[in-house]
Image (cartoon, rainbow, N blue to C red; front, side, top):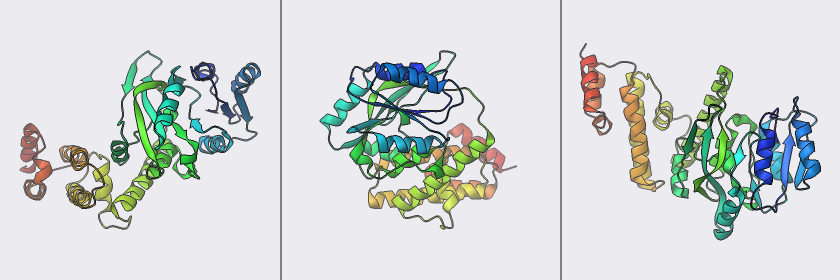
Length: 327
């Protein structure tokens, strides 16, 4: 459990771990030089419960380095992740340990989780449960709730969080480990994930977008053999991640990239064909509907070379596109 200035919710998070029905564990709490009362809260709990191992950093090292130190320090066969403001259900550990014990091929076991806000609103987050579906989903988003993870330590090998991908270093790590072991998501919410309604800085948004692009470029090269130097690389990136307001030329590039991805997948049998094509088609159809502009030549392309996607656009939207194209 990495901690940085988490005094408001820390005790509740610690209690949710100490009160697990499976009780034979060590709780590593790593304090990243907090400036609030977090350290005192941890020390108070550590004095009462010998299962707590407290690591107090003298300098702030950041969440990726902190979690990596936790991986190095952990002694157990299984390692569970936890954030300092979330709440684990009492039977979380028991159910994940049972799944990992009964299925030795599984290296990463995550779960459904529930987003909850200060106003009391709650939302169940359900994600793909089987490895093949999880692997496909990783092309488009992170289908693993990081604080819900319990993993087999030997499956982690030398893989670690990479600071170059902060603040989505979890997406990058679990995507990178994907071909090394088997993943599952238990179809039950075993963690309450606290959602903070705070403004996200433009710098953080830029960092997320930068890291996402690096992850997608790596996916395209590793899975499809498409290098970052490909002349239509932006089309391939847009086929995996919806972009609003693209120009017609960019959308044509996206459609051609999508068709190329379909052909590669059909040839190499990388993902379930129907599910893969459905997910990309949804992105392309939204991209067409949200085009920056329309014109006659673009409409002609959509009706011919882009027909496989254009025919999936709702008829009322096709009428709007036609009218705008004829202006």
